[in-house]
Length: 391
Ligand code: GLT
Ligand code: MN
Ligand code: MN
Image 1 (tube, protein in one colour):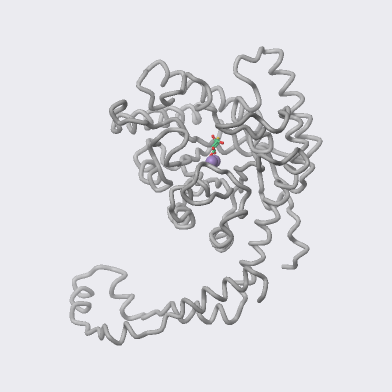
Image 2 (cartoon, protein in one colour; image 1 turned 90 degrees about the vertical axis):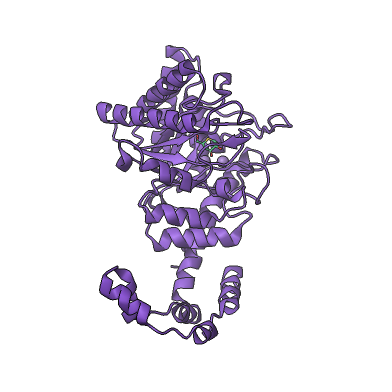
């Protein structure tokens, strides 16, 4: 791989959301700093960045709530034309179940049965819209599914309500032949004080309790584990090992800060590298969605640079992965630290009475074992040198 390959192509399966390049720079303390763009203009901006596969949307990123039939037909037609002229596809769709005041206390987990039913109905309609544009991945982010005070909602009922909603929507997916795979996205807090299903692992446990577990996986987001001080790479690894990594949201975030949604790899170089390495080494073939937005200071032109940079950084880290995997000194150390013992592994791989008896009878010299070298400082420094480009 040469450095020329940092240019993305649709084969990389990079995607952006309408809400990401369309972000206007509004924050809880300040008004927008960029003028709003129409969905078609956002598609043109993604096209201008070059090399992306497609565009994702929430129902209301495309069609505003309360839009007339005529207005929505016009938006769809403009959007379709923009997709065609930029050769972009719609791989993923999702529902906005967090902006409207009706969802102030949650959607699927709301204490109000009418609101729960409305949330399911809104999702059914959003699924129709996604299917109309060819989406095959359906993301569910329960941003309002939580509490500020646990006096206000029963946490066990909340899980049960969430399960009922997902089971209903899986059946609707089958009934309508949409062919969606659902990808559930965890987050610990923000906008709620506490969100249920706080980490990716929460969903991995939950999915197995569903009526159609095969149809449902996860959509981990870098910032969501990172913002609460957790190691995102480990969560993604567990999802991969469970064969549940259906989609991934890439961005960045300084640990334990507010929800920053920074450009991918703009802050956590090392974690971003190990993430790309994990996805590359395990041959992840799904979409890589940049769920982030440009700094509030950026103008529209700089937003294009933000999009280009997101893809370029991923490609650079892919290149670094290749370097890491081919580096003789690094690989020698990797080999050294992974010691096998065929005899003992065959004993512990499978429980039998005989294996257990043999294991119990084995003598281990724990002092000698403790003396074996683990040159992790050397390995980590080599990784640093490689990432900094001095190797
Ligand atoms: C929102 C959130 C994201 C989710 C999106 C999907 S919306 O921007 O911050 O993490 O992936 O609903
Ligand atoms: Mn996300
Ligand atoms: Mn986010």
